[in-house]
Image (cartoon, rainbow, N blue to C red; front, side, top):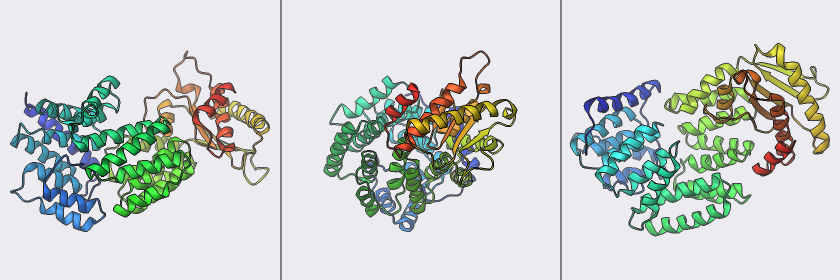
Length: 465
């Protein structure tokens, strides 16, 4: 296999080291994905068992005991990663590759470190190196599939998945990871029968292979929530194994969010950070969820907390940049003063566009509110907030956390965000009034059904309107 040249090695070390510097790095126990037997070192597995059963002080002492000079570099890299020293782990994985150039475990595990720091192309490159060394390594193939799934070719993703799911000889832990991926994908697509069958298969497999079911319990909770079942027993089962397992709440919180159940999603994420304060992704999602509920101050607080703990996450960085512009937008209430306990309408607009667009936006919004109140026999019990963004990327980041997506409007309940005409190049066909009318219909169908309407049905009504 062609070895990395020294420039490429140095580049890898520098990429991750720069990210650590941005984070204001302070080592602490860091949650990683469970190993699922990718490594079989008894000392490391003892530490992992303590960590994943909530014995954090014992786990920290255990990991530190692995940092002696006589330990293999790969083992020290794992301990440093678990202790939150990502830069140290990064360096030690490189040392492990130098020490054992034919061992596929070093690039495989290094690739997982890059996955955790959102550097998916570099992660894929490392998984590919592991596959060259060990073409049948199922963990390397599942890693490559996960990296490519972040924006790669679906055909390549399926090719790597087939290497894991297409043979009973693949490592059980890798097969289990593939099952978890397929369950997530089915739930994201509202394929509830498919996900139910996959959950049952995974439960049976995990029991046969004696694999941890923490993530599986959390996915069971997500499925139960989405299908209006009792999710609490699954969360309780996960927390019985590991009282500090934040994903027991965060994973169903994610599925609550994608089904527009933002109130419940926020409650899930709040509980996630209560039991695992360093769950930085949960802090970010909680912040974004507060923003969807028009609660700006706690939203900013949690996004900042997420960044302080994990400056690698591009969603966090994008959210912070967007919030700088967001806080400069003008907020208008109508009528002012309100005729009842609250104004019927709030507009959040770019200050430069304010003189041009506010009267048009108010007229369209008030006309649609009056029509839909009668048509859907639903009277709003909160102000309806309409956010119109002059910068398309600000709107998309505000909506989903990442730029580069061709959305026009997104509704969260009593609040929706959309592009202004300025957000599109001159001459491009974009009818912002139609978008406002469309999104306002979502407000009424979502709120009148207490957020229980199917996504496809709400969309169909808005297209009709």
